[in-house]
Image 1: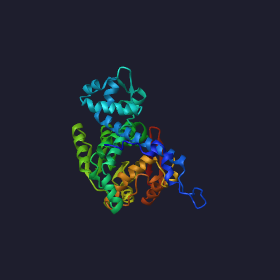
Image 2: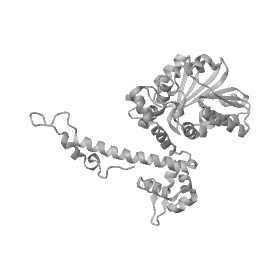
Image 3: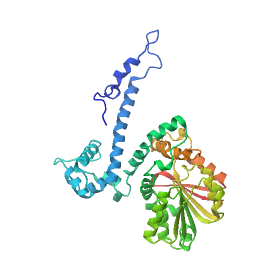
Image 4: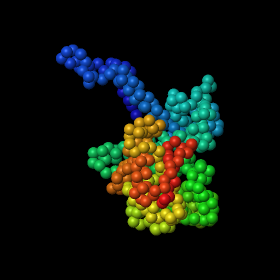
Length: 387
């Protein structure tokens, strides 16, 4: 990629670019519509910062996928040659990656030309740290891959179908490993009182929009007396889940490809004691139909456990959301558009608590408790019963 050799005025000297816009009124004074030079300068600096931070996110994604962060954490500090040899990668690419993240302040360059990953950064960029934030850069690179499709949608409507997002389930599985799997037993299941004991005794459980099924694999291992089923629209994800269950010898869990668009009409009645959805409702074609089907399929004393995005339903209340811009971007580039591609309502990632409560009530759920977990600033956890 090449950029202009001359830095745009907005970055170099924002005041200079303001001059042509200084159109005077007949009185000779600037008009009210003239841009404020200081505001232009500040916004130009913000755009320049965003360009750098966006570049950093892509470099983080590459470091995560190639294992470079793990290698540097375990074997660093290292020169580019040493790191490339240890990781089994091409030195020229490793060197440029190191240089970019050094300029970004993620890595430290030592006097002997070795690069160091500070422990505080390693804790947030490696799997051993427990909270690998490098994963989130992959969401943006995945979304950017469908830019042409989105431009078409802006002009023609419709949406971008799931199959255009080739790595979606892979990335989601990595994300849920941190937000769900790591705390499922200790923090999520205890939100519903008595659920542990029921699972140990043996109950029927369904996970809707199960993706690669890692949550069900974990539950099936932990609770052999219970029976588990996972449904998802993706053939690739379901096949992956089946193969993993077969490798682990899990006979109490099964997976099937299922379109949940008409789940309100096709759901088995009074079938399950526990139904879960992990970050899976807001991108459905018709979320109200899914929730209606869940109400139909849940036994009278059953529990519906829903993890979904922590937000409000009105943008004015999300202005100070710590991840607001990121989540609205993911909504536009994935969650909203895949729903529209199915002829759905395109509810979007930031559907919010208010809309969630409304749709749950319409489905027949009147006992709804919303919880937040300390490890997860992105999601709410709903414990829902018929009431």
